[in-house]
Length: 189
Image 1 (cartoon, rainbow, N blue to C red):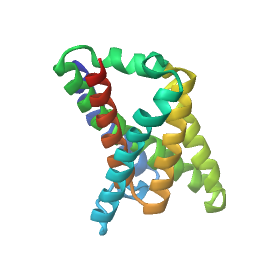
Image 2: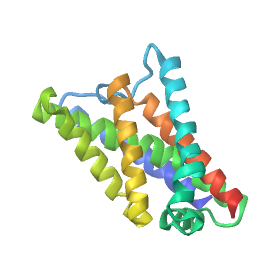
Image 3: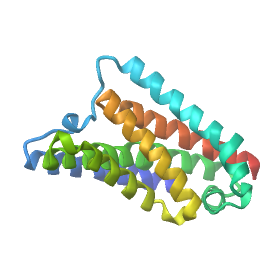
Image 4: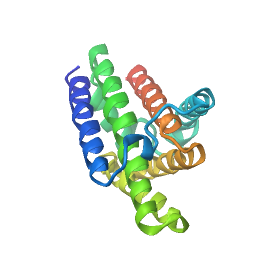
């Protein structure tokens, strides 16, 4: 549960910090896509669908073909969860606060939005590449296969962000994905 509390505290510090930084350049959190869009139902459904499909592919295809339960990312995630249901709850809270909201605001909203502003809309691919690369490297503790998985998932999240124009779909995809992955790994333990 301590991990969940950590996630809540970090998110409580992160969003005001981003708000302050954006205000310095005359922008708001809604400018980077942190808002409820008019077509929120479609964005929510798309995000939830990606969040269900990706872990299904992980459990049915990718994890079995690339080392199974001995993969570094699987071992690291299972260690993070622990053996108790309270550990699972803490990791799920951390997933929604720090990972789903915090990482999407930073890696998709901030990095892609900022680089697009600095380089112009013609260079949007650079923003996506930097976003995906930094997102994958931030998960280096999961080993090479984890970095590759996270990189591919990060690319999907970036495409959702650019396609929908807001962070709702990527936040939901990220949160649902992590929740299902952690529940699945807990049940496998």
